[in-house]
Image (cartoon, rainbow, N blue to C red):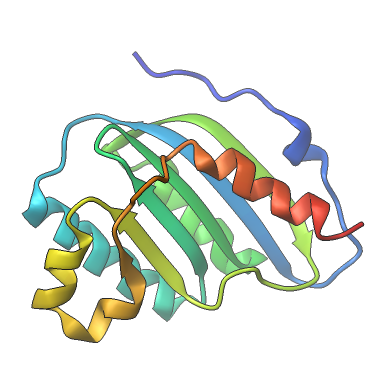
Length: 152
């Protein structure tokens, strides 16, 4: 059963800025990802986000995903369309910020259990792979509030 996303406070945030925007998602995994699947997800997302100038982070805690993306609006719209039709997850919450003065993230990162093992296999990507530690996918809601509190 797919849950419908309901609009919230972040959908109404608007800042006087240029072409940067951000989006956040909390979604449920449709199936558990093994290490090979996580590696493929990371490599695909890292490559696509780098290619399109998207920064942010992805948490995967074994059950849920938490995702924050920043980028130029037109690039972000393309990326959002792909994410929203991806069958690996079911979106529970979506946060949209239509205009940003600057980015919070300098690159794209992924946090999950076992990230260290993948980083050892692919040392070139060590900077972007992190163990999830105490974080959970639902931390996205709290992280999205950074955009609001940093602007006052």
